[in-house]
Length: 305
Image (tube, rainbow, N blue to C red):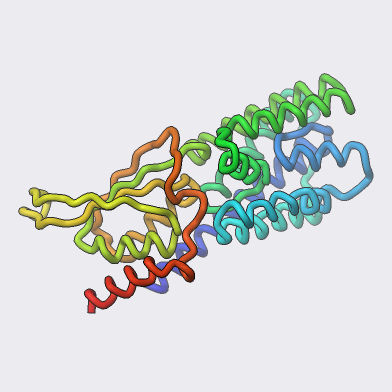
């Protein structure tokens, strides 16, 4: 069990490393040498770089700090820690690696720069990390005002590219918009829609342990349905609880790992959710101060004994 957890964590961080490398390659070999921008925090750093002589790696870290602080109060601490490591990784790659400029063709720069940056961001998000703080800003505003994450990021980047057109040139702004569109589409393809939520329905004989694990490991709320006896691969089934919960796609891998550690044969149904309001989704449960949760956990563990 411990070996599996260790190997899973290693594989996650290895994939994040691949994401860091791809993003760094897109920035250093395509966008930076030609003054093109991407969207989000990376775009802000690239824009500032065109106006002041400061190392890009320093700018990326400095501009990301406010968004990471915001993330501390918005998303789980696990995601923030991974994101800090990832952003520092991108900064180090950019600082020390000397990628050669591959092409001076503006169209190829936009296409392949966006492709690499988008792939890197997507891979990082799939493994519980964020390379660009604009997603965290989107989550925060969605919590406070109910505005969709996609709309927040779109408005953020419209402002960014408008400033680019005014400060640098309209041509660079247009190519940068093309880069952003490609990067955004590739990111969506890699993570299958970061803005969407995922509904999970779980059927398992070990439903009590799974309930506690979801609350403790993921900190999201859940709903329990009473399931009647039925017929499945193992014949006639007894009455049991059916667990239903909603999570962000960024936590899907953690969800499957948590369930698998308890019951490898659990029946899991995953489906897309277009919109969610209320419940315990973004505002994670405080396990240490939640007396009801502690009572539930104690009761379940005592029954297992």
